[in-house]
Amino acid sequence: MVVVPKDYFSMSAPLPVTLEEYRHIKDGKLFVYGYGFVKYLEVFSEEIRETRFCHCYEIADPSRLITEGFRPCVESPDSYHKAT
Image (cartoon, rainbow, N blue to C red; front, side, top):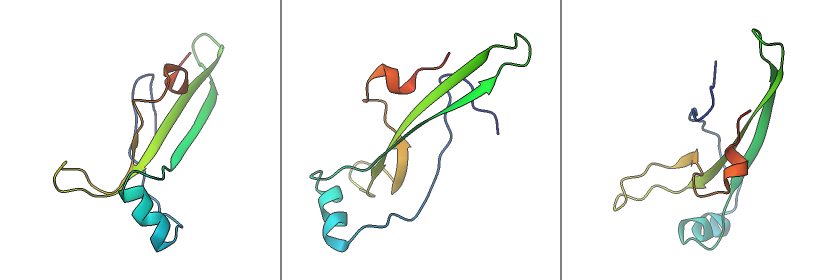
């Protein structure tokens, strides 16, 4: 899979939390984030590049038309989404 700068892909995983923690996430009192980076060698220029990502977990909410799972956390600082 290729992920270019300013692109993203969805990911899904079971969330290992208690029922109480799940309720806190749903109520906006607890937050779950996934942050990481991928370093790779640019084939044409032979430069080492890096793409960073940040996702947050949301509980399904019909009033906001969202599904449950991780989504790109665009409200995080720009440095969390930096691509070189």
